[in-house]
Amino acid sequence: MPIQPSLKLSKNLLTVKTSNSIKNSALLIYKINISVDQNKKEVYLSADQALAKDYKETFTLELSKYKINEPTAYSFYWLDPDKKTTKLDILTEK
Image 1 (spheres, helix red, strand yellow):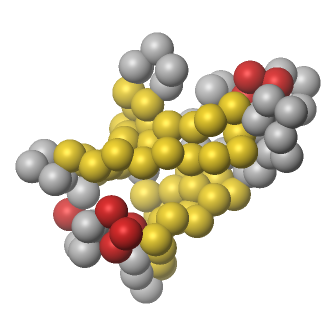
Image 2 (tube, one colour):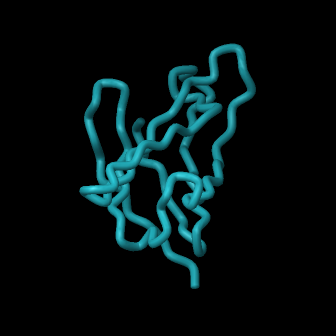
């Protein structure tokens, strides 16, 4: 992804905003996937491409569904299809 996703945290809700490109269908996203390494306190985000589906640019994830009760104690990463990981910064709302 040419521009990394932006993350905003409000209590236990994580909002992920992607920068899709309507010119390149490989960057059209319809779903965000999440996996959590509780031991390392790391959250990995990845995406499913929108092939013949409606795409979105903003996704909201309820972190408590993934047993994340103190999200500020975790590091967040974007996981590319080639398994390259990029650490993401989080904007926290009070």
